[in-house]
Length: 168
Image (tube, rainbow, N blue to C red; front, side, top):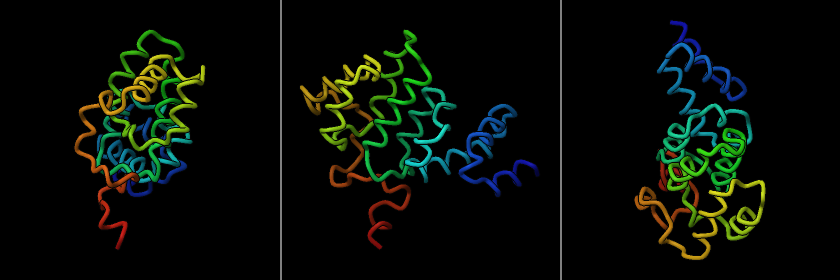
């Protein structure tokens, strides 16, 4: 009952603390509700203190979910950059995490200006800078296999409703 109550009263300002509680006490329904709220409000979540709570596989899963709603893919790559900076802090695993997470970014929808700036920014972890630079040099050959299911006509992620819901 407590889990149901918390799930039904979940708000953005409680997202991080409710997610931590859900993970700690293995409250899967509450955890799922937290992730659903994060998907629907990704741009806001990406600026807050929620993403750093996620493991690499959880972040990747969130980014690849069809319900993820974000107006601009630049928000996604910036969030990944912050996650890498905050969670890894120069750890050797950074390269491994970039290999896992990079395919979840629809990099072809990132602005050229953002990619160039990140590839030159020394605060961007080196493995991410390398992947971005490879993309800038070689284009689609570097993109992840997982991104093939997305329409090249849709820059913004529309969430579960898709393009039809956005144009209705």
